[in-house]
Image 1 (cartoon, each protein chain N blue to C red):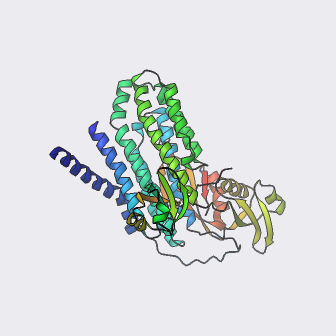
Image 2: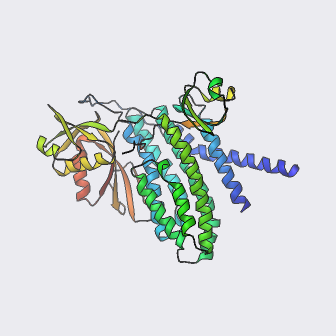
Image 3: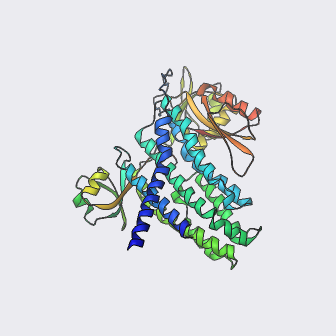
Length: 348
Length: 91
């Protein structure tokens, strides 16, 4: 009985420490990352506007997507313990601080968007902490026993990680078929020690995620879908040039320029890049005059970013850059000329 | 091995505790995911709207976490229906 009591006390203490550790970045963000609201000098031209602060609050989820891509790159060549789990966690919370300041300056967070970001941030941190605990200890020992060559399941899991990272670019994580991945491990495993270890460890992870994804998918049914298009105003191009861009619908001619409707998300990035390339200029997007983009350079570069960090598993660096919408097209042309690659424009 | 398992258990439970604790913040989430709901959940919470139900979970809205625990309508309440920026509809 005393033995049980002692272990219960230890578990309660460990639980308290974990809760405090997981809550610390949230507390830090709430207390130390505040921006002063700026007077908004831009009067929206179009009627269909979106909150400007959303350009900043949509990034954190992308940070997690990028982290999975980094993980896939690392384990394609090396082992899971070579991935910087704590670097990835730190990157999420460190980038959130300047983004919170910017969001506060441009209309502020809603309670719901803050809760979303904290929920995904704490969950991401907990997941990486669990993976780190295993891969840095038992997983590392398994690679010592295996030797320098990747096993069959090392190769398969690296491919699965790459496929998952690509999937996340366009689809929510809970739609991934984790059960199929677990089955593929069972079907492909050899009798080698590392394969048996990967089958057990990753099989457990995939099956736990499959169960959790099922619960989440049902819970997400409570969320209504967001608008899939937005309005923008563009100058410097003819109506014919604009309608030639796939996805763009010209709505009307305004004194300030052409009002167009475009798809959001990934397609918007491609459309805005094309407008810049064709010599056009954005006047406003969804009624806003500030926007966040991410750009990638080979090695360090000064792009005037609010946050910059190296991408694990490569020599590239990701930059979070805030641009005035009227300067966006010029900035996109400068990026290409300066050897930087536009990755994503975070719409509202 | 025992330490790794204990650490993993603490992280998992700590994560659950934080998620559940966050539900006490007013306006934290539009809906609540009730783990192990009581069979008469809607009778215990007449103001709740049912979004989805399965054998082990129920997603409801219109009530607070405090209401759910107070009426003993479920074992654990987690946030649900948070607006995910990448929750695109199927294409």
